[in-house]
Image (tube, rainbow over all chains, first blue to last red; front, side, top):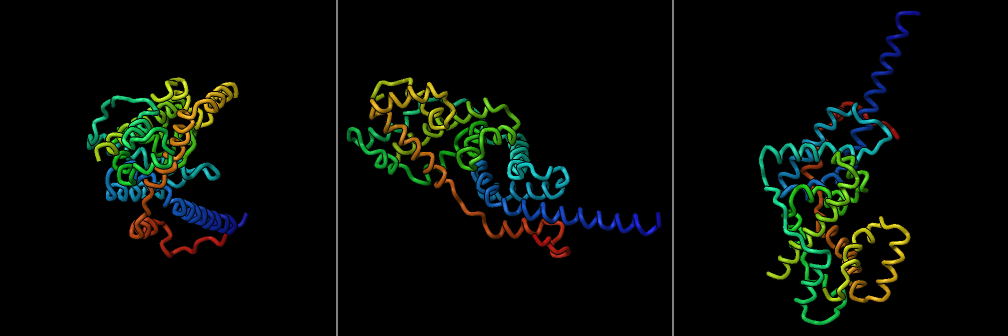
Length: 196
Length: 83
């Protein structure tokens, strides 16, 4: 073996690693809109969401070698983000996660229908009673443990399996929190729609 | 509840999520075809999910996008790979 051969191989390897790293960063950046969409609804303010996304990308770029190519990069990024968010929540002790009183799945519809004051309305008329603002505010009021799952599945459009992987909880827990979380959201929406 | 159908209310989310057994789906469909009250509530739930997804939408600020790009290791030093 000559002395130059390993050096050339080594140089090639370093160049390959650098290329892989750049490719990883490009792929991660392409997902940033989707990452932000979830982050924005996981936390209360835009500033917090921006900080969270920036911190997520800083960490992802530092630990890029821990990502296994070919696996779900979007879920990998969200795993970092939700972990960071949970750590922050613990530090700040923000919303106390009280167990909300829980109504059934028809509660919101029944409230809106009775506010409309006519029997058997078209469901499109019923949904017109809700505003975008009410939805945004209501989401922010859903306790953390439920909101994480609702935001990942219903807004981030992650599958149950992906949400389970991201939050490191069983799929069955994802489903039960999702179902309860949606009911809680509808209950808060019902209060807002009827009082406004 | 308008139609007095507790089972239908309990089945709604699993039904719309597509996690019921074939047998349960048949039962639910059978009931929905006979009960306009439940049928409306199921359609409302589908509309609501869409409405929530759209209402929650807020575009990422350009300034954040630039900050993320600035976090890259390359930052103009290395050429991005030609794909």
